[in-house]
Length: 300
Image (cartoon, rainbow, N blue to C red):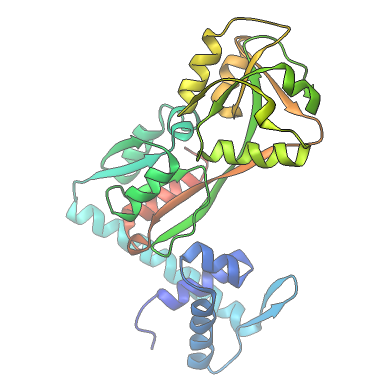
């Protein structure tokens, strides 16, 4: 008889992700470890449960039956976790960390209150640069992080959350679609070296064949809030607008109200992902799992 749920959890993840490699990333373990656990199940059951295909995986008949059993068992475990939490009524402060953009502009104001009700505990929010949030999760100073940059760290589980788009914006009207030559006419407020936003922008500029060293750069700032305030206070010069690049979430309200104006590059969309991260030791932490499920549900 199986002594724990770990191998069945791996099996469920492979089936849901339709990929051994994606299951590996989601579980925070190596791909050989995923393969080994599936082989253990097949040896234990003395039958093949998963067949690898070029475009993913296929369950055998035995695999289909095992999947039904594993889903029922998973539901029972989650229900038991919830019952245990209610019994012990453990009072903690859940420590959530986010990047500046996510904490200030992506999470709705009521999110933390709703999350607090979901986990029946207080939630403390820490806002820092993505790199610092990852360090704090690794050092167990916060329980869960929401960041703008993918990271590779053996101690952390990294899961995709939602997609973001970066846009050019100003306090005066801009052409909806920008050509590379337009960029040299602007006055720029840039993010500091090392920021994820700057990295994404530099990659796009390289594809456009644009040389940033020839830009008229007014200043470099450390976070999105500083960018917005600098652009808001800038002289309104339609001939040579002061511009910057931020998440569309950060300027959506001001664009709707006619305070800011946004533009995009011709033929390019500056996309990036937001990520959820937590320590591998918290993979089975009920509070972390409930929080992750809540965030991935789109309610936050």
